[in-house]
View 1 (cartoon, helix red, strand yellow):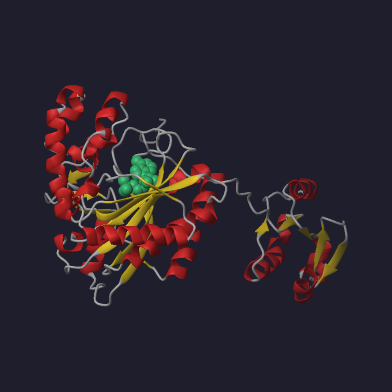
View 2 (cartoon, helix red, strand yellow):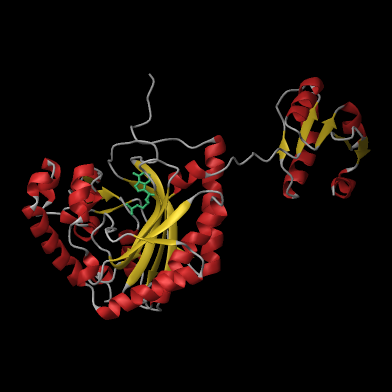
Length: 410
Ligand code: AMP
């Protein structure tokens, strides 16, 4: 019986898992520098955590969630995103008493999308969230953090930061009405799928890649026209700060993001090296979301990045070769061998043995793997209670008692 992986899922091994681990470890480094604490949440949550906050008309909620009824009829969803679970966890555990509260996490997300390069049904996200500050410095900080991480992981990639402001949630809801009216008036140039979105989710029509529709979209109202002067000034200051930080930006007045909870600053880090799945990191402000989920009325700002998409842009990471091989020449020497095996591991060396009692094979494997040393354990070593160490780069060979080995290897 051969069982294939489920469509849109993949296994990680070899080069891929080395890249994955490097990303996670760099995320932890950067998080520590910027003062974010790790928050790990369950892979599944009550469905209501996602349904309303992400937008009942959003693609994620309408088509992509893995939702099922538990045996006692509780409605459960495999998390499709990380912001709402982080907020739920911060509220459930009383983590919002001292503000701002800054958290990060990495983990699997699930969306039933059409799989292609850079788009999977199970994928891994990095999430950074800052709860409780409406100072625009929080927006700058979290964008700067994303930029720092990408520069560390993929310094040679061509990445651009796109930015926009959505204004208040009221501005956004007024804008949706304006858009619905505009697209209703221009219905004849829209596809059937987009006509269906006119009254339910007109923002999504702005994502169209169709050339004719793009022409109409160019003429559609711009959200920026509804935003107050005070909010526009803040937005200008954010752009100035990013320029000061030498993070190049492109303003995209139609950038609205796919999930419903955003307001004010929204941004995306995109690459031109991955085809259509070109967004590496996306995020923004979500003032009001924490209150909607039963918490205090405090603002928030954050982003999510796709680990698999970053992996596609990373350079090769070579496997670290084993430092020391051992060659046990006869099964009866195993008890003597285990002493050196245990000793070296306790002293932070990495050890390899091929379980073959054959000097020739062990030697040739150690050379092939470019080990630094091979330790030979035969009859003489057992009788003399010592170990023979061969330096594979110069061929030098010495026999030493265990207490003298560390000095020799240093
Ligand atoms: P979102 O939560 O939709 O804002 O997505 C944030 C980031 O997660 C995107 O910019 C991608 O890098 C990544 N991402 C989203 N959906 C997928 C997917 N289906 N497969 C792989 N990565 C994804």
